[in-house]
Each structure stands twice: as C-alpha cells, then as structure tokens.
Length: 567
Ligand SMILES: [Zn+2]
Image 1: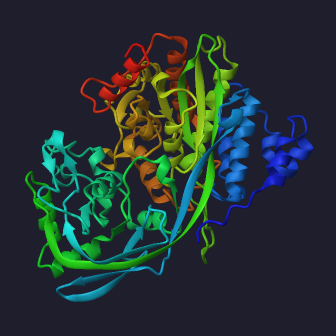
Image 2: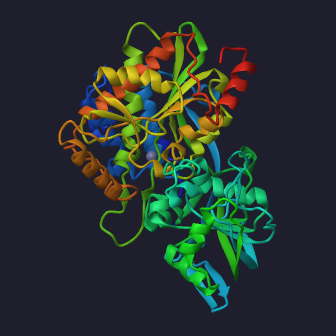
Image 3: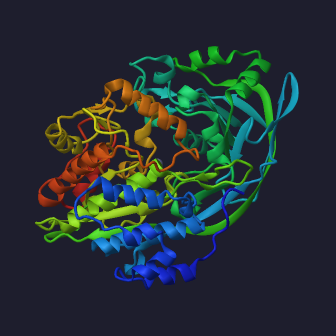
C-alpha cells in the first residue's frame, strides 16, 4: 500500500474553520507557523510564491496524496488562501469544495502474467517486468490463454488514413502496443505530427481505442524516448492504489485489464516468435501496417482491492461585474504522489515543482485580480484540482460538472510545474500553435522581451498530459505556458542543465522545495499569464478560438453557437 487510508480529520477541519486571521497563536497550533507569520503582498511576488510553495511542499503535507491526511491539510490550506484573498466559494452546495467521487483500485503486487510462447512459459513479475491494473471496479479479473497480437501503435485515425487494427477482430485477445506514434519513431515529419507527439501517441488514447475495439487486455511496450520517461516512472505510477472516476461519471470505454511491459520483456517476447522488435517497429511506422500475431498467449488472475472514496477540488470564484456567467478559468492540480513505504531515507514525494508551484501561482494570480482595479467584468474561476497524477480525474470531473458553463468559459490557463530556473529570453508554450490565446500571451511576452517557443521535447506530448486537456477535449481553448529554455543567466546551456536537473527529480522524492531557487522567471510568467486573463475579463466581446484547422475547433464552434454567442 502506498497511501495511508483516509482518516476523516474532522477535529483539524473544525479547528481550521474556526481560525481567524488575527488569531495567530491558535493558527500556529494547527498550521505551519509560516502561514500565520507571513504577511502576503497584494502583488505577485517571489516572496509570497516562495512561502506558498514551501508550505505546500513541506514534509508535513506528506506529498499531498488524495485520500490521506495530506489531502486534508492541502485543501484546507488552499481554501484558507482563497478566503483570505476574498474569493467566493464555487464548489458544491455553495461551499469551497467540489467532491470528486472515485473508486480506488489496488492491484495485488504478487500478480504475475504467465506468458506462453514457442520457447516455453515464464512469469512476468509486477514492477520489474510489467505493471497491470483494471478500471472495471471488479476485484477479480481472469484472463486465460488470451492470444497476443501486435497492433503497432494501436491507432485508428480515419482522417490520417491510418488503422492499425485493419482486418483484425481483437475480441478476447490481448493487444501489444507501441508507445507514441509513427511520426516519432520514424523521425518522419510527414507522418502524424512528426517528432511532435499527437494525441494518438498518448497511452490513455491507446487503452481507450483498444477498449472500443473489444480487446480483453492491452499491454504497452515501454521505451524511454517514446514515453519520454523511464520505466521507474511507469512502475511508480502504477504501483499501489489507482484512482478512477466511477464508471457512471466517465463516458469513455474501459478495458478489463491494461498495463505496460518493459522493452526487455517485449524484445524477448518478439524473439520467441521469431520476430525482431526493431524490424516490427519499422513495419509499424509504415502506412498499411498489418497486425502481427505473436504466437503467444497470456494468462493472469488479477486480484484487486476496491474501495469507493472521494477527493476534492477546491473552487474559488471572483464574480464578474458585468457578465458574471462568463469566466476565465485558472487551473492547477494540488495532488502529488504521497508518502511511500520502504527502507529508503526520504520517501516523501513532496512534489514541490509538480505542482506546489502551480497552486502557488494561481493563488498569486487570484490575489492580484482581487486587489486590482477595475474589478473584472467577467468572472474568474480559480480551480485547484485533485487526482491529476491519477489520470487527470479532478479536472475531468469538473468538466462534467462545471461551476460556470463550459460554453461560457472563455479560456483556460493551466499552471503545472512552473520553472524555477530564473528569467529567460523565451517563453515556452506547450502545444504552440493551438489557439488564439497565444496571440494575447505574445503581447505580454513581447513586453518582457521574450519570444514564444514550443516546448523542448514536443515528442513528450505534454499538451495531453495535464489537466487543461480535459477542457480541450470538451472544446474550451486552453493555454499551457511556462518558463524558458534560453536563460538570461547562462543561455541555452543553463536552460538545458535546468531541464536535465528537473528530469532527474520528476516524480521522485527529490522534487523538493529549495530556498535557493531563482523565482524572477516565475514571477514574469505569472505576470504574463495574469495579463492574458486580464484582457479576457475586461473585454467581454473577446472569445479566443482554436486556430483554423485545429482538431477541437468544430467542437468549440458548435458549443458557442448553441450558447447563442459569438464564436
Ligand atoms: Zn503536474
């Protein structure tokens, strides 16, 4: 078990609710001393940002895992900040919280996948060789002698004239799938997005597609460049409790079982069938690829413990003075990976950069809106969501149950893992070239003498890996921009060093608060992102859309037309 069970920390909640700002002595008894001691400025400042991150990423918050005491502390802290700033509650029943019902599924780590190939039978161990789980809510999923078939990238994209499932009935079978998409592995700019990962490259899409096709199970082959992260990240993310929305809150199809296998396991599996994995990848990169039976079967008895629980989004609203039913929404996930059990010295996954920085960012932006004249004409929603690390579930739930109608949500700005490397000459827009919100951002970037650039690893598919993407799928334009690669101090080399350093800390206990961070850059980012929202809440005629040709434009146009408004 990775997470400690949820204990309803009622005494703590009541104590916090009773605390006033002038009651510093009793504040100190239940909150980190610093919150009571720190005097927040109305402006966006490095000092305030530092204070917020330091608290949220402290060991006391235990790595902010949903369903733990760390959740209680985190959502209370965010609520207290929203209240201090003067926002209004925007959650359920006029409260600050939006309850996100979920099911928690913990796969038995002694589960083995029994592979039978021409070379004999062998057991794949959970964690070292593979990870597997179910989203069905069933405690026992039994798959016996399911034929393995290699389906390339597992993509069915009519508009790309590409179908990896062509001519295949996968009923009862287990599909084996490459991560990413053909353009990436072929290094071919004419295929899909070329090096830039498309939505078809995301593992979430692959499982959804395999479920639509009726497969019994799906296994993705890990490779570090393709996934953009190592096996450790897969292993950590899939070990212990997994959270899902309840099936009734999630219209997407679900597989009986889904997981990943290591590259080593895949290489051997293919070799046992007389196939060379690299040759098969080449074949899968080619239009007209046909699925390949792997002359092997897999059997497993996946036992899981299931618990119904809930976590919470925190929702604060600053009502608009003219069109309060229209809103700009700022978003950041508060959750991280919690505290793990084991022999290591530091097993608290503090998640300082990911994503105490983003939560601190929306609090700082909220405070500036709340204290700056004139009052915004449109509303602002500040949304701190849960369960990002568990499949973007808090944002998915909000999109299903929004506080302000999505058709009247003008745009979404997401803050996730801000850059603490110092000011830069560029400004990274993840998924550059998507929406007209970028045009507004550009005016503020220009004023900071920064140029908008795409992310340094467009193959990572990061536009599909954070919470704004649930809004994107629902049509709402979203901006995800932060930091830069060309640092004022040290240039591109220093920028790359900062990227490399964070890559080592990503989803590790070493993602910790550091008092030596240079926060000048993050303050610039927040000022610019505040600026984008400022333009959109002051000008009630403005509706930024997706750029022409964007896959999500039709959804937005229909949604806006239905709401009777301008596109
Ligand atoms: Zn994050």
